[in-house]
Image (cartoon, rainbow, N blue to C red; front, side, top):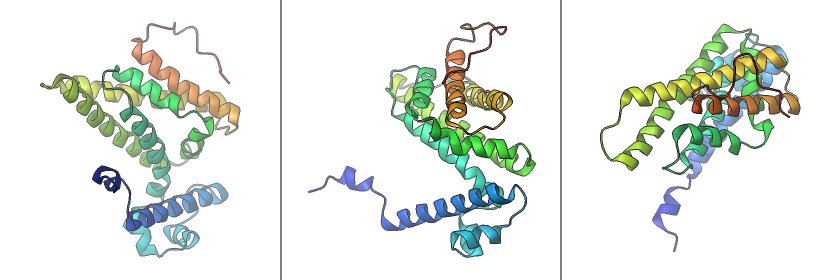
Length: 223
């Protein structure tokens, strides 16, 4: 007999169908972005490519930019899932760094890197991306609060939590900015490996209080 805990974790058919539809919309939006460029396709175009109605599209996303930003949401949520799997006694910043290390294949960052690159020329897409990062900030605060509550069992310093989460996200954004300036949106495996390492290194810098490296000695490219 299956245990209640294992069965409760399994998504039902309706949830699986919703996830598949959501993914189909995202994939269609990304394909159109690649072929037509930012701002050159509509919700109707995405719906047609995904094989759904316009009404169904709006059941999932409020705009074309929101559909595209879901790529960034997906990457950040995957990293957050890895963070939640880390030991409760581990320092938060070490957990953040380890979560990124667990995303071992550099191609894991390819979709979010592509969206980031294309968003540089589209303010609306860029704003939707920022919403994804803000969403992740809130999620990090909640995950850290859960961990500290289990560990301490007492009152939690909200300023500490929010400053920590904001710093983690700011370092992640900084890594994306440096990668784009250095690689110009190149999506080759070597370039994506650099991006992944920059993300990891940014967490290490934050964990050391930025004392591990001189500003005059930038991090080397790693492949």
